[in-house]
Length: 217
Image (tube, rainbow, N blue to C red; front, side, top):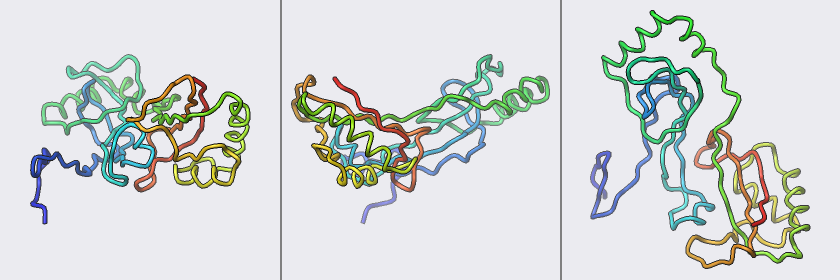
């Protein structure tokens, strides 16, 4: 049985990644860009597509990401351009930093209200790239097959659902037969399928995708 480990877990010389306890949505935090609030929190896990870039145990914890809305810099100056940004490391506010937020609320109510009402129009998107070896004569057919698969899938789907839909199609390769990170390849003989996950959405331990893009090298 493994002993109880701390945040910098090392056991028998091996780093062990653990699922983090997430900061709450709406919580004020310190990021590398200043102070803001957590808008989305995600624990990401390794899935089959992760094998394209490294050897991993499917289903194990990968990393935590936070999408935050930043109010000010570390000196309490309100950001001129409000936006969402992605972070893998954030911290709770100390007492001094909480006072900075409270001062902004009291001294600059209009700017703070603009921050509260700000709704970003652009999405932070996680993109997964998978390469497949194909022949030139197959390209047009693959485009048509991918379009057909996209129509059969629900608006939001997982990688497993994509695999299932592709098996029912005439696609000349299996979705799981992507080129692995340690395989040699001639990129001129490859196509790339890009899967888009808006705001890093997850369903349990699976990424939720909203789009399939076919890219010819």
